[in-house]
Length: 630
Image (cartoon, rainbow, N blue to C red; front, side):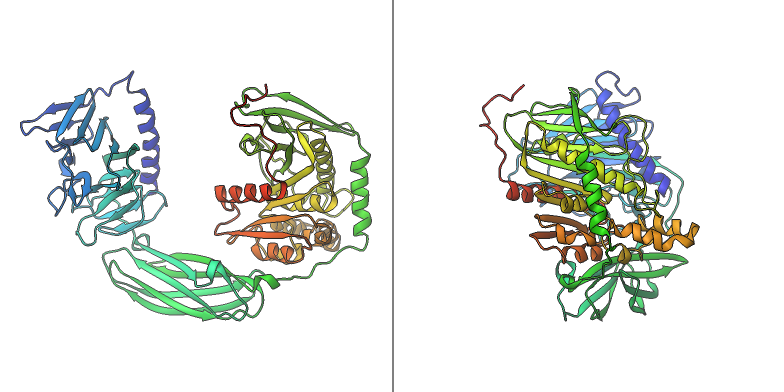
């Protein structure tokens, strides 16, 4: 199955490349001929297709096996569907392209040896659906977005890219849809629903033949875990209802035993039970439990079921009384003196910034510069993105995360009115040979004076000085952000440098380090590996890490702070992050996204930009009609 999914995805790339080159190289093995009924017959080495006089794709054969069904109720094979199939009686052939229209709805078919590309356009203000009704011989479908996920046909799923597979190995890969359905019809229907008017929509059909490989029963069932906690956060005293949902997408009844395990961030078990169930073919069953957590924490819920020797798992996370999460923090007795020395070392250096415009990366509204940041004879390299309109802008320093392999100028942020600086702190080129940017936490873990992150922090303090002195920057509006390790160091930087007026970390590391050691993932697994190799150095290692535990910096972090957290993040656990936020004395907020360490994606950046604009106000931009400065 995995091979067929990969093949289909690779074929999608070939489709794109082939269509881009069609003007120069027509497909040599495609024949299109008019038939006596007013439609067109398309013949290739891979398939035979028939477009009827009504402009709909009525038939698609592979090895004389029909992949479509135009005899089921309300079906025309492949067609627009508005109460019934829409007839497109005006046909025009241009080379290997066939256009069918009724003046409102239009389909353009581009035929190639191994696929059919459909371009849709319509002018119905209510929108329209486009459907492909598959042959009743289709036995099951693969979801091409999730490897190994399949369902016996007919099924109802929100799967947009699928492969409809016959028992004899013939298949039809469908790209660009929104869902599959057909239980009521008794046929599998693939659909692109609610296509907006006056916008082109592209779909691809790839017929083919492979080795018959019926799926295992475990591939035809799905398992989900959920809770009733609003926004995944339960208030103190609230009982939390948990559910495990078993969905049987196979054509046979399934019986089994569903287990649930609930544990806290530190690994303390809250619930561990099993319940038997029976799920009929093409139906599902939901099992429930109720828990009242004993303390403020985040709890991971894991449901599991074993089907024919294959284990299916699903998990979710919820927080309980999160405003009172407050793990203990231990600060070294010489903590203040340690950081005074670090800040003094950075302040004593002469910082010199050189910049060279990179015309290839600049845009019409943003100038991108390559940077050299020199201090104490050591040069770091990076990028600077500056809006071309004259004015004084907020400065935003971006800190890369652990194990990031290269950094980019991030000109997109400059489009929103920021001067954006990104620095690689270890001295390597920003576009040279790829290697890790940040030294791992295991570098000199037993010596606070030589710990790799101490040197990194000195260079980031140099970067703040350099950013404040950039001509286009308002030095009274400086912010710092970063993800993972960069997020944790951004918070430390904000606590140690009062020139920074806003900190916006994403999924920050090193928040309550002792609390986070229960995690089996990096960065804490790196520390654990070091201690396994050096068991006699545990006290020295923990002391070193306490100098960089964000929990020990909260008293000094008085500027506005916006922290992004992933509900299911295994690296920067949400309990650790809430433990930090609950200590902050200044204005602060947490954005919790239903995501892992990748965070909230575009929405996360939009939230961050809106927040920074509230802190700093609008940038001093000229009217839009003015010409950008050269």
